[in-house]
Image (cartoon, rainbow, N blue to C red; front, side, top):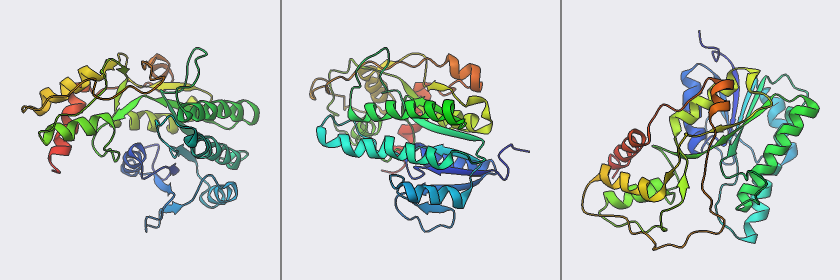
Length: 295
């Protein structure tokens, strides 16, 4: 019998890319999943809650009384503009603090937060308002675990790709759809190194982190061992798609403070017994097939 059978699991950000895949997986495992989004979904198991509202968040936790919480809700943007500071601060840090506060002192056995590969390392300045807010949220998660024993862990997720990505402006869907339509995607120089990870592998990491309290207190990278340049990724997509269209490099300026991404997955292997199993070529092939079937 699955350890998830009958477990009350709360998933925030359930309409997002990772969240929607995670909700399906938990349902397959037999969990009693309660999903949270900002907009009503018209289903009994869904709750429309703005997690930046502390009172509404506390009421949600009291009503659901979750045994396991997966917090994936957030304001995701790579924009480097002062106007994004407020929304990313509220949507990523404020919502996380509200949720952790509501869970403090409850019987929740595991809380898993979605961190980001964009969080700065080695004393670097954050590269964006989003990165700054996610890094601060990780700091508060560690505080709540150390001071108030909230069983929280953070999975710093690398660049996720795969079928069902709703943001078609992101690199993989943008390049894929352009090539499938016979158009030339316009990119940066393509030299930036990206740590890609397939969405099913990410979901497996979250499931393992939530299954027991062993991950509590840990901040773990969820990615792949070797980053791949944007150029090599785009060329691999062009090979998979076929056809005459080819990416155009240098047509778009790189964003300020866009750094190479790297993930150290050995801690996740030790704590969760997790390693990615889907290769980049296989994952991109599945993604291309998914998009092609919908054109």
